[in-house]
Length: 286
Image (cartoon, rainbow, N blue to C red; front, top):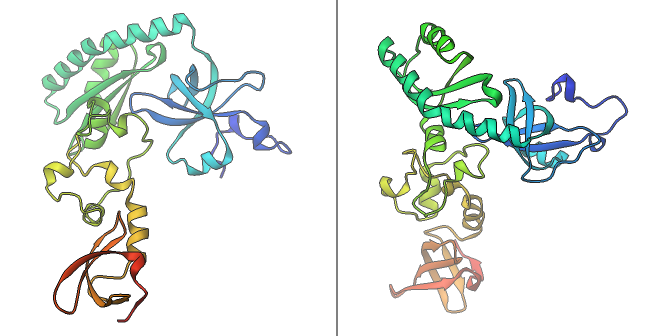
């Protein structure tokens, strides 16, 4: 089945290169989208555009023209098409909608409290022209939103969409800077949350203190994933701990690794410990 909706499928006999496609970033969760563009128009990086997706009209930022290779690397992206570049009136309307968010959050929180719903309100997003309000929330169990949606639809005079998220998405919506002093990766360039494990931290010899390994979401930091493949590749090339290696200085026993510098901690036959470059190893003897 095609990954594009009917409006974006390439006509028979026409290549994907002949159809203009753009990668955009959109929404409070900064989700990536693959949008078709009008053949007679070109959009550059950074341009603000209005797109039509399954949610309706949405404001988005153009990142680049899409190639087949880039599309193959993308996951869980939104599809649709670009209507036009945002005008000054569009920007003014978006600013007005942003200004409505604090009051909307107070109204929604009051309704949640009144109905006794077991959920945590995280954030509120007004889509383009306010034609829909997306309410992001955390909840451990299933919540009956029927009365809440009815009440809010009347109060806000628009369609209501409830979207359950996890703690990492909560940080993506609300947090600002990480321990490194830079804006959070999840709120800047990450399109999807990478899988991170303690194995990655141990291999990179990062601190195993949970407080130092945890990001603003309370989970393992996404940046532990960035260099893991390189560490694993180098680690696989190094003689394993416990093996014996032969160098110009004789036979040594490997007792540790410094993966980033590609050095080995070795023990000599007279029990001395040395740090040597992995390139000094002539062969493994056992």
